[in-house]
Length: 134
Image (cartoon, rainbow, N blue to C red; front, side, top):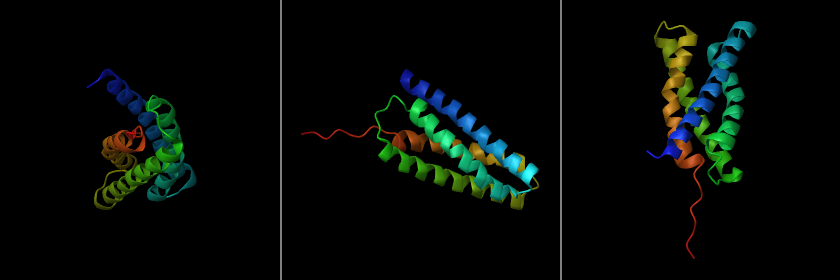
């Protein structure tokens, strides 16, 4: 693996951890302080973390890649919504069929989604446009 890709993976991890912590803490706050159910609070956590994640990845993780916002934003949104759907499904299943506390189930769901988000972001959302040959 090239050094540039290792650095990108490292930056992705930092942005991802910050976004995941923001998501997680938002969910905890909504559940504990506002009395919202974990599955609904998870939507709020996603909404807050999405913007932090998008701008962190666009400006820092993949900032060295020449992308256009018009192309990368809808791709990243699609990936994020797919990841959130998987996150919500895993959280639902864990809450429904296990006795795991919601805050542990939420952490498990976040880990399940992290790897696929990186791969899809790297290969699709923030890829450089292909140059056409003339």
